[in-house]
Image: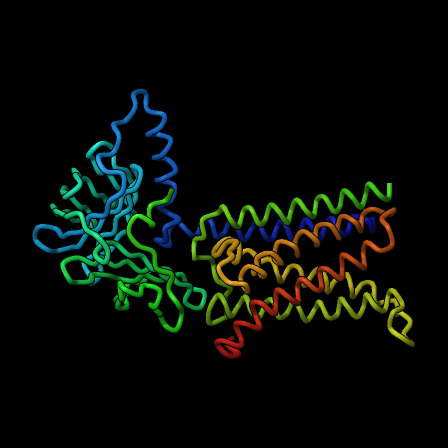
Length: 216
Length: 176
């Protein structure tokens, strides 16, 4: 019997680890972190490759568009690379959403948490269509931009709490919000010339921008 | 029997270590994990749990030395074995929530030397733990196996603690 004890210890560790992992997996989708959005990319990728007839190639391989809804209610930036797309919608006050999806031919289709959607038609110079977020929808137009204009994402672990920041830089203005533990707060100022210098509550922020944000 | 048993234990440990590293690398970090109640932040909870594990590991070291007769003038008391086993069990259970947060919320990272060393040692620690538990169940395992595996475990845990808890306390102060 004595020789079984280490196996029981091993099993106890596995059971505790598995239990904690299950609790985490159950809790994560409600947190609004990107983990909730990941499966969309995973599901979308096989769908495009396994389509019965080959999908039309994206009109642009790699591009970032930034702009606003026509009534200037929200700012939007969309980055595409190799047919995959990531977008951020933000009003700078309380509404914000990260979306993921595809560019198929000239058609953008992205989805995000809580029913957020971006559809549209894209060309090298512009992207335009409809944004839905926070239970509302707006038409938008966005133009192709070059750094320092574009889309920025910051991530930080502020004393164990996941913090994700989005910024859209377009037309000389920054629109952004940060979210940590489900709470939305104003974004710190981003110096696009030195994106690595952003600090939130003493924690350094890892900033990525533009097409880097598109999962390869 | 002895040789194949220890080889099996070491192979299983190696597989666990590599598996943890691969999972930590492939799994997309969520930057989120359920917090342990009663602490100001997830990192503070981790730092204190790990410190508790290191405290128990010192008990492990002393009881192991006593059992192997390496403490001059000390004959191992009869309770040395049970204390060694139970402090070890408690220590490894304390590390599980910590390691799970590392793996699930942060993943295997290599951006800074401290983080790379910590990630590698975390994989080594659990691999060695598995190898040691399995080696204990093989009566024919070589005499050197338990002291070596235990020594690796102790060293890895202390180094893990130095690269995380001590770093945390040094940068943010002794926070609960």
